[in-house]
Structure formats: C-alpha cells, structure tokens
Image 1 (spheres, each protein chain N blue to C red):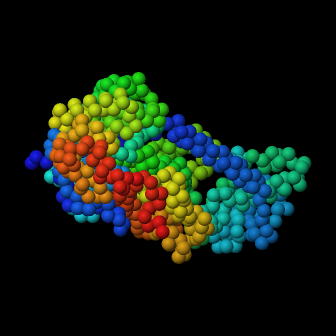
Image 2: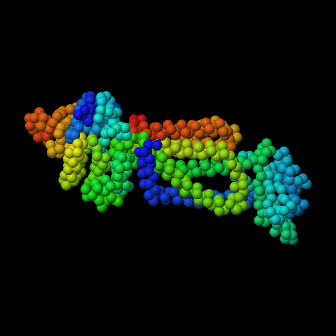
Length: 240
Length: 395
C-alpha cells in the first residue's frame, strides 16, 4: 500500500451547515502534502476528522488503512494543532517528559534536553511554560509533536508567529524528518513554504477540491501562475 | 491497569503535590474547621453548666454515699437496680445513683431513656445543681462542700424498650466517616472540577488526545484526584487521631472512647460507601468539567450538583426518626443525595443492612455512569474551545 492517508467521499456537517462536501484525496508514504485553503475552507475540520476528534457525516478517513486510535495503532502520529497550548503552570522539562512518557519514549528526559539544546532553550528547561514567549512555547509544542519520531506528521500552520530564524529552524526540522521517511501534511497560508517543501497539494474552497496534484501539475493547470497568484485567483472573490 | 492511565495519574499527583496552594488548602482548612469546632465545643460546655428542668420532670436519687441532706425531695430508699427499673417502667424520667465510694471515685451514675442519638445530654448536670444547692444550704459542713465538687456524672442511656442503649457508641465510626466525606467534598471539589477544564482552557486536548485515549486520560485523572483527596483526608484525620490517642485518659475523650461500638459489618459498609461516594463525586465533577469550556462556566454548573449532595443535611431531624418518611427514602436512593443520606441513616441507626447495601449499589452504579459520561463528553467536547455552554443549553 503506497498511501498512508486515504480520504474517500468525506462529508462533514455541523447542525444544518455542510462544511465539507464529498472530499477525496490521499497522502503517499514519505511525501510532504500541502493542505491549503482560506480560513474556514475546512482544512482543520478534515484533520480533526482524520484523527477521530470529529465523527464524519459520511465517507471514510483512514490512516494506514484503519480509523485512527492513538492507543491501538503501530502508526506513530505527531500533530501540531492550530489551537495550541501547554500546561502553563508546569515547567518546560516536566511537560516534555510527561508527553514523552505518554508517547512511549524510552528516555524522554534525555530526548527533551537534547531538543531544548538544539532549539536554544536549554536554559529554560526549569522555567514555567507561562514565563516563555509565544515563539518559545511554539518550539516546545513542536518538540512534543515530533518527539516520538512520527511516521505521519500533521502540522497546522506551524510557522504562524515564528520569526524568520525560527521559521528556518522549523523548515530544517521538517526536511530532516522528510529525509527519514516521515509523511507530512502541512496546513499553511505561506505559499513559498509550499513551493519549497511540498511534493503535492490540495486546495480547498467551501469544502470542495479546487486543485489537487503535484505542485508543477497545479501550476500547469493554472497557466503556470505562481501559487500565490493561484491562491488569490481561487479565493479572491470570497476571501474574508 | 493501562500504563497510560498510570502515567497520567502519576503526572497529576506529582504536579499537585508540588503546588504550595495544595498544601495551603490541605492544612489551612482543617485548621479553620478545628477552630470552629473548638468554639462550638466551648459553647456547648457553657450551655452544659446551666441545666434546666421543668416541674413535670420526674427525678429519683439513690444516695449510698450520704452526701445529700434529707431535705432533697427526690431521694428514694430503693437500690440502684430498683432505680433503673423505675426508669424502664416510666415511673421517673431521670434516675441518679450516688455510690458509697463517691468520695474516692468522684463518679455518679445517671440513667434515662434515650430518644435516639444524643451527643450532649445536659440532664446529668441536674444532679450537680441539686448537689450544689443542697451543699450551699449546709455551709457549716465543709466536708460535704468539698465532696460535691470536681466529680463526673456518667451518662447511662436506656433504650425505649428498656434495654441498654448505645446509639452514640454505634454512631461514632459511621459519623466520623460521614464527616470525613463532607470534608472531602469541601476540600477537593474545585480541583475535581478544574482538572479537565484545564486541558480545554489551555488548548491542550488535541495534542494530548493524539497520544492517549480520552478514557485513559479521564480515568488517570480521577485516580489522581482520589489519591490527592486521600492525602488531604489523611492530613486531617491523622492529627485528630493523634490528639485522641494522646488525650485518651481525659475524662471526656475516655468516656467517648469507651462507648465506641465496633460493628464490623457497619464499618465495612461505611468504608465501601465512602469509596463509592468519593468516586461518584469525582465522576460528577469531571463530567461537569467535560461539558463546559472554562472554569467560570464549570463553577456555575457544579453548584446544583453539590447542593444535591449536601441537601440531606438540611433535613437532619427527619433522618433521626426511626421510621423514614418518603422524603428520607427519596434522598436515600437518589444517586446524588444518596451518599450523605446513607451516611446519616447509618449514623442514626435508621437503616437496615439490606437497605444500606441497596443504597451503596445505587451510589456505585451512579459512579460508573458518571465516569462513562465524563469520558464520552470529554471525547465529544475536547476541542470545544469556544462554545461556553453545551449544545442542549443553547437556545
């Protein structure tokens, strides 16, 4: 099986409002997949349904051929959600070790210390999370997301709020994981990130697919315009 | 037990134990309660020194020590057994026996029919009043004045059917467990409520639920909450038991200790009820926490649940009656009020073993349902960050 993620005829309604209409796509093993769209187009809803937070109105959402259950799968998943948070009153190291334990790391303390050193936060390990800047907190969240060496990494707007240096650091980490064979789904509004990192992408508008394929194929379909321009063309008339 | 459940429980326990606020609540609240009880105890003592009785109260006294003058109208010629029979037959309301060794033992006996659970019965002090008034009239007899001070009157309660009654002795252990449960509610409620709200308020739910199922998260949290509650309860109970042990020779404490009746069945059932009630309370709090998005919303929803739990206390008099009325029966078997209602009834001895077991089964089943609902609700509402009220409260 070449596909790690399979979404077939996915439909999602909240009360009487349908937010996803018959969505189908697949993410191949080892690829970086861009899930793109304007705010409210259904990207985060799709990911939440994929991870079992929402029950789909209809359709199938499978990870490695099965519905996702965090404790009943060999597939390791790392998810950096759009709505991010940590235990604000706990120290950085205690929080990371706790998540490391939950994710089954053999030595979560050693991993956490190594990661903190890499991202320049080794002197913050005993600080309470609430004392950190939002950028520093995001680095901790990213560390927690990747600490179990995930086979599937889902990043929902990972660079939101990062300065250029930290953005570069994040890109490096993503590329490293990609080289190790991790499949990555990336939700982002930065088209330069998509062009730089993604193998394939899907553009959603109002819960339906507007473009789907490799980056060169999408560009070709839109007369070789830049991704930025394609985005504006698709969403320009309805952007919030 | 699932290893993730234990990991959650360990994390929650350690992080709470590290918080100064936890220890402040653990140590300050019992201290405050101790002060309140001390004040009420002193008040009770001061009331005790001024007994009153109306003219219709029938009194009899056997004075083998000869400390009373013949002017006292209540003296009888019969012996102690005769006096006790008079109480059993209803010929007198109160019978006092002053033994021949009163000067050495400094103890007199007091017999009366018990109307149920009496913790502070003042009637024994009537003898003190009689002795005091009688000795005051004999100011020339210094020995009598010396003899009639600094003594103790031992309260001997008789049941209505004439048998010896030890309602207080039987009530002490279930009553103590009831008080501990009340303390548990007071000490742990807020923490129980906020334990899952924290995940939602701080937007942690999505990150954590990709690593662990909501079932193991919730059960782990409940285990931690109960363990922390146990720490707080021990912090309260151990000093009390230590004081009782140190002061075991004190007249008041030794008289209480001597009346304690050990009923293994009642004690076992009371402990099981305590555990089931604590789990039910934790389950209800976590369920409410799972329904809402913020601590502020949670506090407005938990109020009615706590009121239901402590409501039986407002009907204490009804629970003392030997024949329970409909309200008492409803409280006894309604899940939220059942814990305290059952504790009160076992304390007053107004419930049989079968009824007690049925009540415990109701509480235990309700605890399981509350935890199940908490898990399902958390699963459903885990990423409900912005909606303040659950769907069924919305217009």
